[in-house]
Image (tube, rainbow, N blue to C red):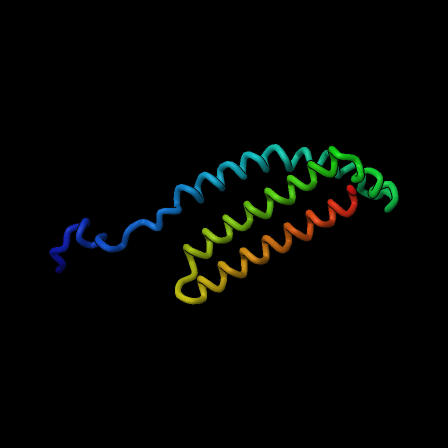
Length: 123
């Protein structure tokens, strides 16, 4: 039988001091995606089945290119934060650090690749 109080059991455990930041980043990116995803679908949808030249000409215009770039950027940042939170909850030890580094590198690489492709088309 343990005679430790709840406070004594929690002493030294401390907060990570980033929970609120992750929470608000996820909420803000969720609201942004709530607006961007339908906008992306309605701008990208008409181009399905079109020729390569028509798609290039369409995404060379500013509005579709900006919508696609914002959607790609916000989506991968949302993925990074969500996957990092999931890894922090379920993976422990050195493998946690390796997994977080891998997910962060993967999300930045995918976002950079998508943004580079949009920039190549738009410019």
